[in-house]
Length: 293
Image 1 (cartoon, rainbow, N blue to C red):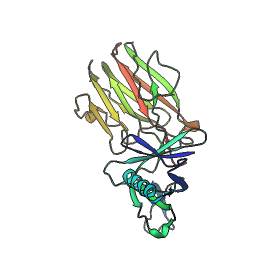
Image 2: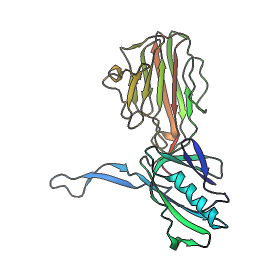
Image 3: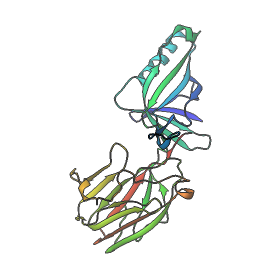
Image 4: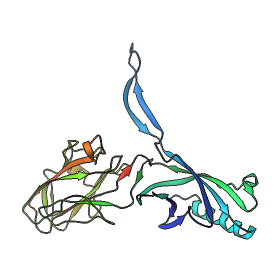
């Protein structure tokens, strides 16, 4: 098992090093959950109307391990540099003994006061608190799922999303996506024209993104971002095209569900459209998300 902090694309190992002794982690499991309830007049008890997960507060306990005061000062300076407050998030990546990787985006939220009471000789012990606004972890390797008449058999891991040529006047294909995460994934879908009446439907959940009545011209593309805080549809020139979705589309809730909400994690996704050519491309990419480790 290894723990790394990733800042501006640079990874700093916090475990299995001669600089730092990794002693403890906490709050990597289930995040705080708050049930939402309501009660009507004369009602006994409450009505449960759902839940919300709170932001996650991670804690890492490290010890600077030095053999002289100058080295200890350098180690302290390195921790301060890694975790200093920034507007941009840093990431904590944990590599499990199986080789699987889990990552979470967070911000420094406390610690690194370097009290003398926490120092014994040349060993300085510190607890670092990190606030993760999104409490879920994710596999940092993106997954792409091909759709098209010549598409492959299923999802596969790739460093970046991959487009697919469909090469026919009509596109109508269903893929059974075996989603292995334990929390819903919100994909980004890009549709390159020409295509008319494009519809993406998760037949397992009944959720859809319906562009019936819209033609995406050759040389243009739409990007549908279903992630929370985004929920956008934009053309390649940045124009807002959310109005191109039909009123019964599910941009707010569309995604890939985990088992048991999707039995076995299998999401059957159908992509349809007409007027396509060899220039038409459709692709979906997402990160596999986990409620905890």
